[in-house]
Image 1 (cartoon, rainbow, N blue to C red):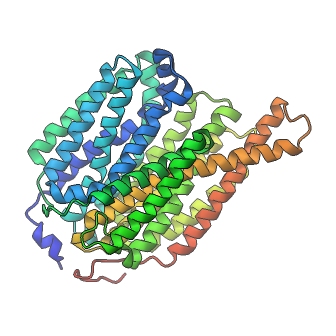
Image 2 (cartoon, one colour):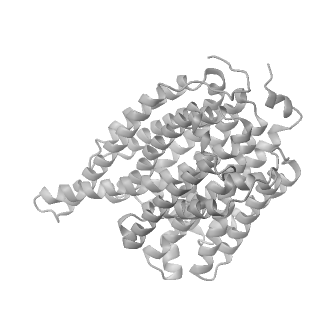
Length: 479
């Protein structure tokens, strides 16, 4: 039996629209990790310090985090084509500026413009998928998105390492330009407007509060101790502003972000589990490269190649898990996936100074399999329960929470690791000896992974309450 939404969109050719969205998303998400390995080359080219060069990553994350909460408002003012083509146009412009940048300031400006495009692209893609696919087919579509979200970042460091080894850093941007152009041209022919332009009220106070709130929180948590009193002040301002933003959204008639999405139990539960999972994932993504390069003394390229198989496996399995989700519902995937994740994170808490590279490849690969089993099924379960009028708000909140979780996760787990190192060295004889320093770092990492394990256990417990969900006006289907 067709759902109401399926009947409304039965004349839409979903394949070309999905392909257009995926191309754009792949290009934008690839760019997030594409520059990491080139930071050392950029420091030499522009004669800047580590603190300065990190703004290329920090500014990118800040802009995306700031744009996420207002994406629901923009979706109400602009059509699907306008949002996508505008986002890709911004991304392409920023890429061209980066490619020809004569100095660091211009390069940073290009990254900010790139981030503006990427920040608008993800909500547009998620909203469009929700509009054109009925709930019982969204798993497969979201699985394709999962392929892009995991495959592109996994490929980024390895591919950029190969490019840097034979070409200059500018080619990291030059080679992206034709891909972005192809995405725009393809979308011009095949992308169709599927959402309705409602022109909601522009609530300036809420926009200011969300900008200060998310920006301050992401920067303050991301900068950690290095941010000093400025980082602490921005963190406090961010927390206060977010509190005022949440209060205002609950009392005004036309909120920028409709927080009433949390009255839908599966959405609320899914977001809690998703945040905990992202924290666990960030612990791994941050700590493993440090472990491989600082303890095992692997090169950046070798470390990237170690993580590459896991990312590729995750990407390839995401569409498969999406189709299984459509048939089985969330629990048959999420609970086994989280059980596997708990075992792997437990093994990460027992790292030593002499672990083989093959062992890490296998463990990380199994972790990425578990992520493929849980990430998209959990996201789709929550979004499926929302009525159509709340799609843009649900995706905007989900994307915002992901950015905030990233900032918090980075600061939290690096802070735990550093604290563990200091505790170890404070009780160790010959604390300055190279062997002791390595053991201290491993001790700190194991402590950080122990906290990640707690998050994974809580996620598993909460997942026991997940069940297949649909919007109230759509026919319910029991598992």
